[in-house]
Image (cartoon, rainbow over the protein chains, first blue to last red):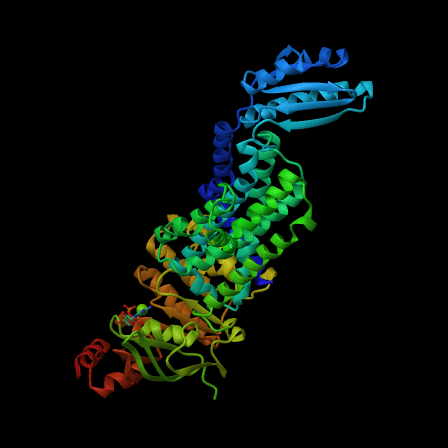
Length: 341
Length: 240
Ligand SMILES: Nc1ncnc2c1ncn2[C@@H]1O[C@H](COP(=O)(O)OP(=O)(O)OP(=O)(O)O)[C@@H](O)[C@H]1O
Ligand SMILES: [Mg+2]
């Protein structure tokens, strides 16, 4: 198959073009790390009020990095309301109940984490413990980094594949190699398939690195399966690549390709769920429905935050695949301008 | 019906600008056919129509009995564009390997053909160099080698020797003649008169129309000129 020759050539170009390679693989790592530094305040030492806890429990928790004070329920309620502590732990029979102050997501997280560690340490005692978490303010919202993380992963894959893929295809047009390829027995779909294959491989590599780094190094909240995340990022990459190559038809040079970013990429970010759209008019909210990133972000959040499996987001998968099929077909049609076959 | 290429009544317009007008040319196999004409006369456009990568407003291009575009005939055509269509990031060798594999050459013969074509254009010593570091003439030669790589029956070369020194130009033309002996057909566009002299057949294009066509001798005889240059100047002036 001649598409394989196209893939091979693209891989070789990547190997030579170290900048594009670095842009695709390491720029996302850099940006996501910066966001982590800004949004994820990890080293917070929470203040916790403890009411009527069993000795076995207090013995363990008191060694943890936190500020504890024992008090009665009334007193605890008062200091919680006053915001003097981040949470109140109370114990009734075998039920452990935690009331979080709730307005600082970083504090919520560190209290919950601390408690989970303690419960794990207690496990040798084989106690059946149920933990109930209540919020004085807010809800179980995770911290901003965990919340936006899945969307960011999707965004980076989409953005970099769109840009690098689109510009590469544009260059083929400008430097005449596309015309030269079309003056060969190469079929139009083979050119497109070669592009998808070559860039697809890089998208896999890029996705693997971004996902791995976010989850295992930056400790982004991850409830679902790694492979499900990879599947969605791949679908996003496919949509991004086919959209990028398609739009490159309408660009005369690299700079004009960059001009598509505020038009095509930025709006997708606004509608992808990084910002809360609840208060927006439903009609305007509908704009997000025509954007691939919206679906990718929905599925990624489902997987990473709620631990969903493919049966929960098959609709998003179908829509993403649909976008790709549409863009790929338009690509093949656009090449018809050059050659009918 | 044994012409290598047959162009019949081809007309084309870009926007409102008439670029080709009723061009009919028949090219016999095994010859070097020269397309001559001033800049902007429509040579490149005609070649694109011939290849089938540009659909003319009117007329058709038939290559070896098949109407273009035809993926099957593309296998037997080598094309060198006026501007070098090369991947600057890749080495000469890698560019050649790519063009060899997309033109349908079998895997086993790719390496060998690439090597021999690079030899023809004297680029063997630079095979492992990135094309971005090539001079203009080197790129031109590599483009030529890429057009030759799948051993096509018909070679279509748009100003192949621009920027190539006289010594190498001589070798390249010798190679062209050797290819025609093998039965290959070569179509070249050129501005250079001494190259035009070497063509078996010529067509002179002006403002999208074929003014005159025939052998070099026929062209000279038609206006009783001694040199092709005179012919070129004569037909360039007439009615303009
Ligand atoms: N893509 C295009 N869009 C509009 N006009 C074009 C296009 N390509 C060529 N032309 C016009 O068509 C005419 C013929 O161009 P063409 O490139 O065929 O000339 P040429 O004989 O190859 O010239 P040269 O010897 O300079 O290469 C020119 O007037 C040119 O401006
Ligand atoms: Mg030209």
